Length: 253
Image (cartoon, rainbow, N blue to C red; front, side, top):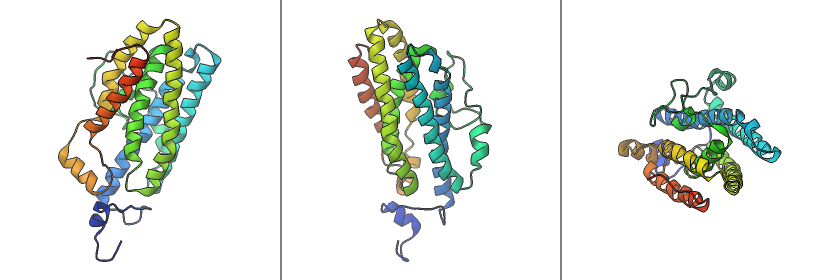
């Protein structure tokens, strides 16, 4: 960045930041919000899957679920360390929130966040059994893939690098989910699988949020967003529909 170029112009031109020094207050606030949403969603997601490990029908399935719990917790830790560089109390953060807290199964909060933390709304709903867990993971892993592709290009370089490292591991969670779903389909679980798709589809879709043109323009100008939420959601619909159809199931209307 040249002396004649302001920081705002530098970011708008595609520049990147590499440390917390001299980060503008509003940039810091938006970056912290992005990181908190990711960390809280990973920790809440891991807590939900931890409760389901022993529901796995076999050792292989239980190992896969345990691996997902371990890796999601590790991913949260990686991003939380960056939050710590901006002043977050990382030790208290990881233990203060009720990560296992869930709503009743039939509650409907739309895209509303938890009163306790910044997790995506989908992680406020309880998982009901092994088949439900597999389908939730199958659909959510595709949403995470789209979100991480977006986050991997943020202008805060250390965070972008962490997201790029995390992305293939999260993608493998989707592979494990598909393997589990195919086994369930072969075992005659199609009806239960379809019920789970019908339940989780609208909840995962809401995790992308709506489009706010003014806010998006600002986030784009500082390099924290590049693709609108609606476009990410449409990409997810295409990806998730393909895998649902591959299993002989249908997407909700």
